[in-house]
Length: 639
Image (cartoon, rainbow, N blue to C red; front, side):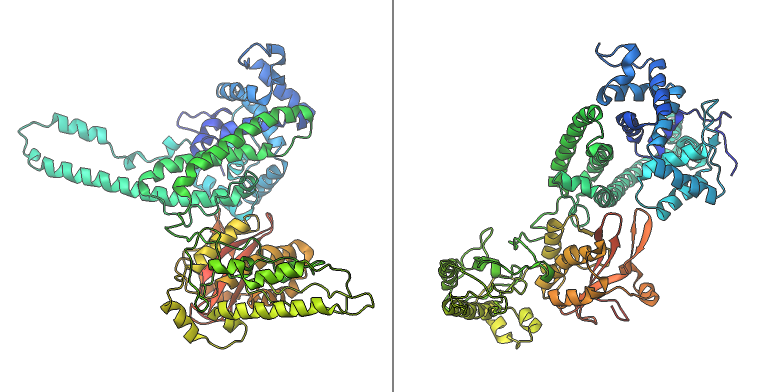
């Protein structure tokens, strides 16, 4: 493609890329590349480092204070040198060239990918004109946007701002200034209108409709403001999801989980515009923080880096804290603040215990199932952390555990395993090995104690079991018992799916990411077995992730999931399913389309109470599951 020139007829200077970055990329991006370069000075090739040092000296960069003289200014710490260098680059093509060459040197993989992309598309790869210290021309704006979007769609793992700058550098062309892209005929000249009205005679007949015209203009302005605010809400939600997808590792390290923001929070339009600016600032801070988060390879660089790292960490944490009251989903609005179990274990995670452990009654109750009152039992107000009526805290079951713990454990025979003790909401737990007496026989007192304890637990289970539990275990339908619960005023049914999603996001922020499509059904989803959904998501975060990381045979996936929660796993959705359910099983992330080819679920048909699907894909680069759909099974075919 032939290069274009600006309206002035001259090729753009190297320093003009700073203005282009502000117009076409993130407004703070240009300053961030200076930080990257200065922070990596010790790792630069010798020739490029010498050129950078010489350019800093010859450009008369001055560091505030008298600590660094002109001859050694290039050795100043990054946090002292960053701002003076960035300001001087705006008027010095020599310094800009040195910084850009150093930046390209530390972006080796991206450089090679961009060269390959441009060559494949028959675009030049000459780079800037180093003799004249200029770019060679301008991109046609449509060609630039096509190449930029195509590169991002074909390759993942690169920052889009880095991609933009590298495309400019390798091609030797900048996108045209925004002012030259706009069509003057599309502009509304309000100033010209004002001048015409001022020149109009006060006796002109046009004034008869002036008030109606003014009212119409006022209404249009108000409506445009509302549209602008609504657009800002959508941009804000998209931006939050993109930030979480891109910078979740950094945020989790800083103990800030914003995974719940945006997609399910109710953002008020009147604050969206200002909030969007603050969220953009958060993204800028994170983009500066990422390259200096890890410890440097040398002590001198780390000494400089540590100070800036601490500053950015404090700014990021402060910004997230300020945004949290605005963006974090309200517990009353969309989620119920529920007490949840302290741990979720899949079958693969459970190890046989060497000693008898105390398991309180609270740990053995399904946190998402309504509590069924025992006969003559009254429910106490539910406080934070309460799972059961108050009298259960001093139950005979708990006392039996305490009595059992007082028995000294003296030995074990691998062939004599005690009967399995089933706890209501935990995974099946293999009891401890039987105790043996001095003659090698089974300690009858311990065996009898555990058998008695198991009987008591089964009785408690029968009192607290939900209809969903009974169906899963092949039990009888307890419709009469459920009706009694409602008449006795048991705790009201909760929005189990929303609570489960919230719990899974908080419990597994590194392993699970929710980018749910518009067709997903979370709030108000009537699927009855919330605990099974939570178990399935825990299986994804543990067993599935381990399998994908090479620690488990993928062929055993379906059997493993079925043992965990009686669900099925599939990874063979065919094209017909995608065609009929494209909104469910395809998703866009940073402009790239992903097929949700893997699903887990239970049941089929259009009964939302008994059938569910969760569709997802494996993010190989970040080793996590990206969940794009939760709801009913597909319209036709097998899931």
